[in-house]
Length: 336
Image (cartoon, rainbow, N blue to C red; front, side, top):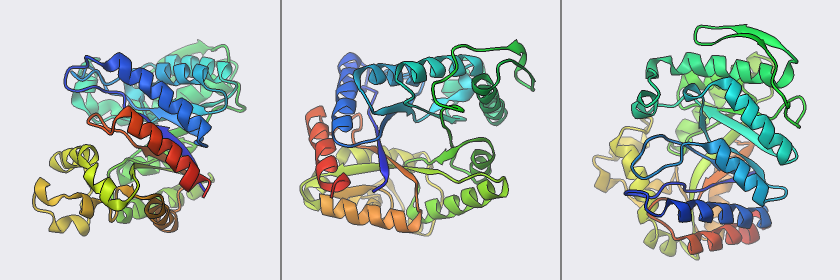
């Protein structure tokens, strides 16, 4: 079985009144995931959202690291263009040290204009800032002292302490969902981390592009597949509880987040985008046996090296149901 990470929900629509409880529940879910055989817990970010979507993934990773013993902690993903890479390198090194070498740093270029506008930055700069940021973080972690001259960052005589515990450094995974971005991930990072949205057909093509580019640069490919999962007693129970995940995926459809593929040509409206259509090649759902079969399909078609699962959305399931699902996945799928 693949190593599996858990991606918690860290937003509270519509106005964030219960965000403290949501974040505390995320920590508890991470502890349950650790006991259930999961390999990691990773956090995503956005900025200045009315539902209080968390803006600091590393802070949450560090908090979970202090509440767990062996679970890897990390980001999925940290929006690198929005923060100085030296700060990222320093904060990440501290987390890696205090957790005994359990950090995974996954970064992304971002896409939301409000995220960038809040910091006075242009979305048009995201690719260059990401490339320079990854280069700087690696130098911070592996070189005693260095200088750097880029378009966006000019650094002189930099030496960060402490260095990370992992040697030569913690893994850096780069998120991407375009051909160009995937090739960038293959060149710059230690792995490519996918989005949650695309079909198996699109992911298979993306993975082929990534692996070919990684090998061209003499690197070992590492694909981290991110998926939504609805684990229940049966497919019918998963269908009954699918409102929150389908609300999210209809949002993706409405905002043109999906890459066009043959399957989408038959979808004319959000109402056509049903649970029964989505489980065929995007969402993993149903009983433990259903989920095992679907995971086997993803492994055969995309051949991921790592899996990250999101099991809770802002609209549900409840914390209690998610804890049951995490335990059930550990007992019936991970150890099955």
